[in-house]
Each structure stands twice: as C-alpha cells, then as structure tokens.
Amino acid sequence: MDKELTFVEHLEELRLRIMVSLIFITLMSIIAFPFSSIFLTALKAPASGMIGKLVFFNPSDAFMIHVKIAFFAGLALSV
Image 1 (tube, one colour):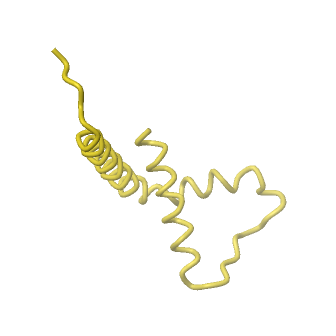
Image 2 (image 1 turned 45 degrees about the horizontal axis):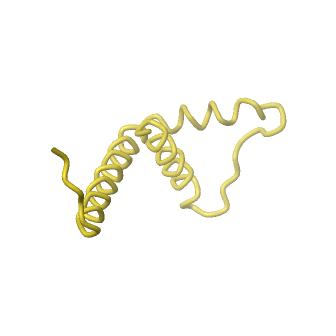
C-alpha cells in the first residue's frame, strides 16, 4: 500500500531526480562534444549563402560555441 510522503520526503525525492537529470545531461553533453563541429556545420548550412565563415572576437569564443552546442545536444539527447 502506498503511504503518503511528508513534505521533506517530497523534497528529497525532488533533489534525487534533479541530481539524476543533471548527471544524464552532463554525460550526454560529454558524449556530444566530439560531434559539435558536425552540429555546427549543420547549423550553418541554411545560411551558407549569406555567411562565408564564422568570426570570433575572443580566443575563447570558438571553444565556447562548441561547449554550448554540446550542452544543448546533450540536453536534447537526455530528454
């Protein structure tokens, strides 16, 4: 028979599910990172006639673009 959970037990269950979700998002992002250049090429394809190549204003911009693409791909894969 199911028992009613207390408020604190509900919070513990929520904390556990958030932690599991974050672990899966991180894992999927790590898996997606090597493919981020392929995803970037696919994202640039519709605008290929308008833009020649991407311009980065800071040295870290190129890396951060790949990290962001890997994060969103990991988020999509974990859903």
